[in-house]
Image (cartoon, rainbow, N blue to C red):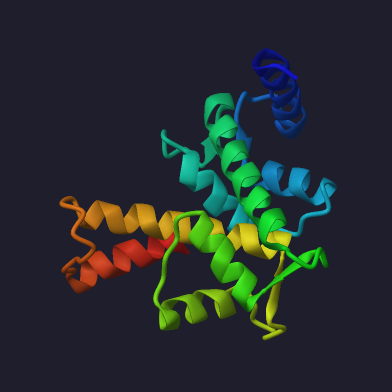
Length: 172
């Protein structure tokens, strides 16, 4: 399918997700659409996905922003599929680490372990696709937030307590 056909298909999907026909998709609409695709996302996770691409800071995404959100989800789904080496529909601890590195997230051991278990609260030792997408979205948001405090791209920041609270509140 060509770029125009794909764009037309994505536009139709956007219109289906935009249940109130506002020209914008909010977190609740996104959550319902993902549920129809058999993906379990909390409203909180959907709001985080929306915030990642909401350039207007309105709590919604328009079609152009939706396209970027869709591309992110497709990219993360691709890495999930690529690193699900045994094709069991989940990524184990090592597979998650490899897939995240493929997506550009390189974390030291303690940081990776903390992030992994934050999205595996039952300590099953694996993540389903929706868990993995939420982890990647959290890391992308954290990376963006960190970049705002690291304008020289040194990889290190110095934060006041207020700045730390600001940053972590925006990741929640």
